[in-house]
Amino acid sequence: MTAEQMNALVQGIYDRIFDSATKAEPGGKPLANTAKTMLTLMKPGMAINPNDYRNPWTPGNTSGSQDAAVNTARLVDVIPNANSLYEDSGKTVTQVYGDILNSVSIPVQKKDAALDAQIDAAWNYLFRIVNQTDPDTGAVTPKTIESAVYRDYLDNQSAYQNARLAYVGAYLAAQETPQGKNTWPLVAPTMQIPVKQAWDKWRANFADKVEQNLAILATSSQNSLQKAFNKAKEIFEGYGVTLDDSGGGLSPKIERVSLIPSNWYSSSDTTGWTTVKVSAGNSIANASSDYKSFGASAGFSLGIWSVGAKAGGSWSSQHFSSETNNLSIEFSFKFVGIRRPWMSFHLLDTKTWNLGNFSPKKGGISNGTKTQQKTMWPLMPTGFVVVKGVKIKATWAKSDWDKMQSALSAGGQVGIGPFSIGGSYSQSHSSETWKSAFANGEITVPGVQIIGWMNAVVPYCAPEDMP
Image (cartoon, rainbow, N blue to C red; front, side, top):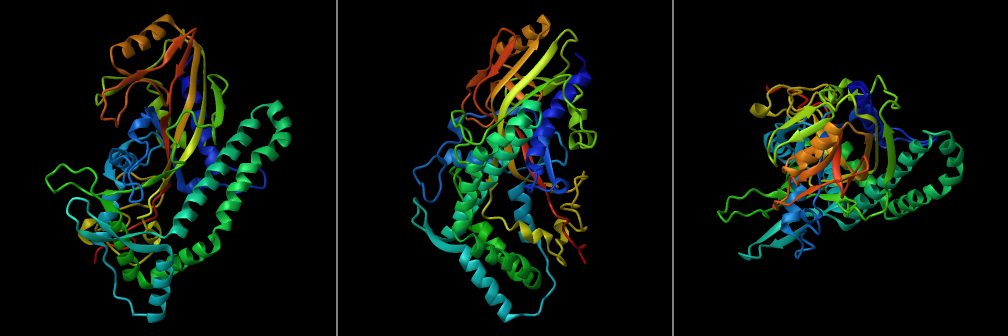
């Protein structure tokens, strides 16, 4: 089996996941815009220890795990480079977004009392201020949080989007075989039930009124930028909590996030998964795929087998022996949505403001396209791809089969394509390791892991140079 065939197999995985978000069944509407969405595929995936994320602390769940809340916030805070192969840029969403709010410079605009009142009314419908008491000092601090109706709207919207993604994934899977195409009309009505239920629940809970107020904020912000940015800063600061306290009084605040579905780390969950099977030599490569255009193909062409030292060490890529043949991979995947209630993302798409010395040149935060190299915030992670039930099968060369097991036995980390097959948990405080089962030419991977991130291209900003 050639390196080109193996690379095409990984591209088949990439395209299938990306298409689930950016394509639709006949008559349907894609949930994401191809030109403004990028999938960044990991090499290899990130195995998840459920204990690191289960039952996170929230103001309404003060008995929850503070570690889980911190782990969740940090998991989704990384800004990736604009590359279809996942790369950590070294910057974080909260860092750059906070710096933008602190640095923004806006030309003086004429006061409009009626417009300000309209913005205040919309803001008060979507958010509320609550007093939060520090359990150690007793100090009371006002915090801005979502209103119950807005929080329910976002939860129900995410549930609907996940149901739609699962439906589109099932539709695309059915189109891959003649039998699947023929039977799809029979199974589609049943598959549509959870989509319709999620839609009805979303729209029935004041969705129109929420969207009316969101539209007021979005359309009025340009005419009252200073007020809009001040409100955004108020919301951002209102969500910061100190959960990772070192005891020195200088610990940074954590901006809480929530993930939909909340039990995303569970391998026993049966809702919303799409099963995919790809085989080397049978994958049809899309020449216009982001996989080829934005770096993933080059990264995986170095070898789809990844071997690393113990946690924190470097990785090396290797090719399988030419004697390894008939490689096939089966897995189930679904999307996990990221909610950042403290972010006013729409403000990045407004005009006439600049960022002073923080980013003197316009377009320094993002140029608004997928082709970016030196910008601060090219992509905004909006969700990630989790997989379970991974089975990797081949007619293995003995040298490959033995080397993989040897590396795992030595405590190393091993991956095949975007899948990890053993090692340690990257975010865990525990030193626990894990590995897959090897039997009869098949590698069975336990648990859940993240293999990729769905990202929105950040709008062109700042819109103006520093004067």
